[in-house]
Image 1 (tube, one colour):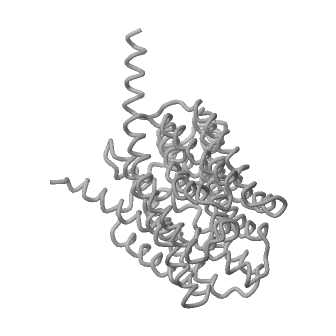
Image 2: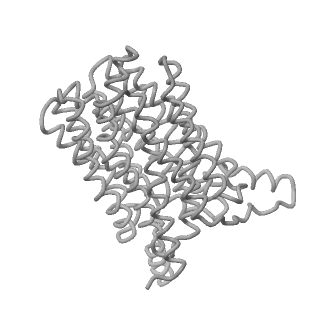
Image 3: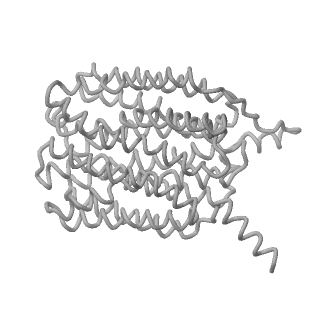
Length: 414
């Protein structure tokens, strides 16, 4: 029989599975609506990318700003509830936009509300997780993105388009976000986080309060920040433009595109559990390298074989991997590399930097490449960025506790 602590841990895992899943559905919903939005607002690929750039840019800025003050937040539960509820309200407001400019403003607002949510979730989860299960817990929470946002999301959004208007897609998932926010208020225990140590001098105070300068002294933080930029570039290239690639290049209907995207989501169910679990067994670094290489190959196949079954199969088989390897480079390695009072800051900074340069900037750059050359060419550029990420991953210092202990013991015997 599980202990009370273990039961509470699993309750949080399930709750955050749905919380992060529905929040992330908001981020992906617009990509499933893009074929309709192009017709409604008369926009091109670069302007489609600007929708993602605006939302992700505000998300990233909010995450980075949050990382600068996160080490001072002592009640993460209350902060989490506020941001989740604000996300639901912002998503609902998207139903009332009438122009492209209004849509950009609304998406930027929602992105800003979403920024601090994942770091807060992971702080609460790290406090409740047992010693050897944090990797698995993060994988299951990330699985919420797969099942809620990727598997059921495309079908939900495209079927709403079939029977109603595109505006109705937003309240369809805003209501569940409100429900998980209220559930978090009812089911989650507030935790008291010890603030950063009190300084004895002004110089010491300045050094301690500048969290970013502190955690960038760690090698893994620098490498993971760069990997985050490259991986997020590839991830959002696939997530935002694969629906257009399938409909414009592979000539699929919107409904067929929805089902193909959901099939890709089914493969993500396996990856979401397998990747963090394998990293618990074999180490963070080798698993990170392997699962950055596979989507690099997949995007190159989409670039080289446009319009055929090979590109569709490559998307289905590898399109979701980058979303599932994110916990390794953005959560597990950073949290295992820094002291406790820097964990939320480190987590937020790696995610935020990747989102602002990879998730916000590259969709616009990618859309510009797609307009100037082609969508397959854009996929090829994304594949090249992922290859650089693979090379960087080779320089990560292993952080898996049992691997570190083994290395220390071996060194002591020498």
